[in-house]
Image (cartoon, rainbow, N blue to C red; front, side):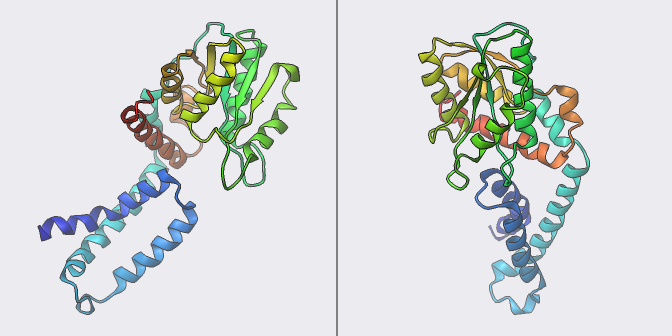
Length: 262
């Protein structure tokens, strides 16, 4: 049993990293500072000063685990591991026409500007309208208790620069929209009132699979229209962010399946 307990210390660093980056309980930099202080303190204590045998036996394991976690971060940052994890989630882009295009926005910067993913998704959705695959562009923005409707404000600013008439653009704004599931529920309520059921759904590469399943579960006829493809996924600008996205989606798929959302 003691031997098994030692391995808890071995895997603690990497498990902590994965849990905190997925749950977004605290910001990454706060977690990094806090965890670094705890790690340095625990690893620097002389073994003879640790009275608890359980903690004493786990100290070396923790050191090894911390080194492995550090190597893991370097690995996923240097190589497109997240991109290859994302490839199975990418759905082929539909060429069919739909009642409308629905874009799922992806947040904003602290300065109130659209982040890169939001920009890419909205531009792609606008292209679909300009190309005649749908007559109206709907954009779903989320609500955050910490940032309020910051995403809505950023998206509104961006849509004013699109080369399509403003009367062909509708932006969702509601405190109900906090997750992909609540996003689908709000879209169903709003779009069904407009007689819209068949949609071209636009979101990023990793997110497209879970999103389509979620919207289909609520009765939509969904045509996937991802803003990325296999090549742009593997050769993404930020390998670490891509890995986080891939992990988020694989975990999200399992969770949504267990909750009956897909």
